[in-house]
Image 1 (cartoon, rainbow, N blue to C red):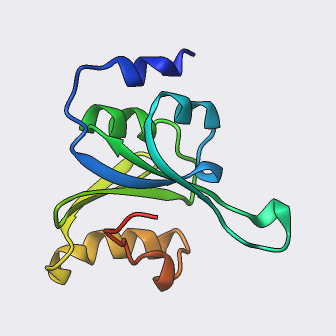
Image 2 (image 1 turned 120 degrees about the vertical axis):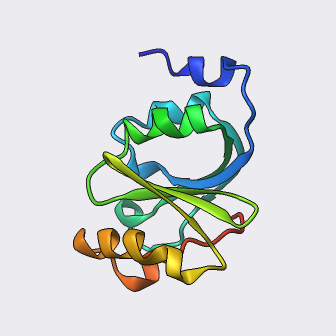
Length: 126
């Protein structure tokens, strides 16, 4: 598959997001994204380190990314205070400031066994 097609789309990349490389079924998709920053966590065991990318994406790119996220993981993107969280096969849109709009995404994340600290959806970059 040619992942470079993502970067060739004449589209508005109005969303910022954090992608954990280990959440993808094929990490080559990152090559086609507008990566702004990268961070590797400091876990002492190299196998347990996460490779995190701050990206600028469009809705089209989010849709393409949703096809490559693995089970029990999610990625989230924001534009202003509005958030889109993408899990395998489902996405949720909610407002960062209106916690009542978080109910469905939190319920779904918990059903996957994600901890509360993993379901915080920060809207700041790396």
